[in-house]
Length: 299
Image 1 (tube, helix red, strand yellow):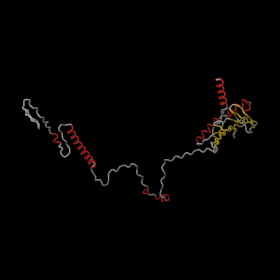
Image 2: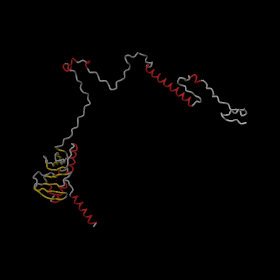
Image 3: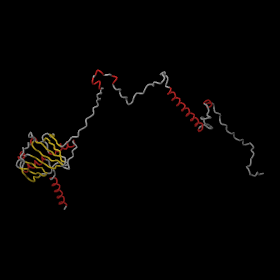
Image 4: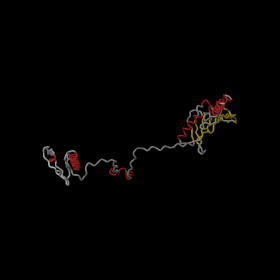
């Protein structure tokens, strides 16, 4: 049972692989194998429709007969196409290569398509030419490209409009507009009529105002002196506050040194008197007992 199941799966895979889309070269090889190799020199046209990207069926035509190739099998025949035979010695681009070139051009023009039709014929100079038709999903837009099968170059295209890139703005300065009287008679030109230059975004600071008094460059500006005095007074106040905090929290018996009752620097520099401590009582000293209110004295 297992052997039969594996054999059926392998048959399905082989049939699906044979039905896969082949290129135009593969289809021509099938004709040469099934009919005759000499028949390849009489091919006048190769056509494939609805390729995504390659068609499932190719039609190889001669003047007498057309052969339909599906996968690796010759399926049917029909009437031929009386056209100029292809010069296979100059054929260097297969259908997959033609699709690559057409897809590249479609991406440049931002053209989206659903499938591609391929036709290979002899061109004006007896060279093979690929005609690739790109059709969108709604069958409304069609782009046609002619690609040289010998060089791979795009010979012509229709329906592909390349997006025009906006021109780069020139950085060169615009020409100055001269007054009308100068255009009429250049001899009337006066430099005073030239427009004044625009101020810079960050203009240089003015060195000195007109109403400022002339002072010696060695003497600092009075404004700086006022600022220095303000900073100095602030630092003095902070110094007194720190001294006061130090006296209150570190020195024993200290007192505030700022405010209405602060001391001067001269008083702070004087030697500090040692703190008086009570002397220890003499153990032989007679002490009298003082009763508490309401306490009865003993005999």
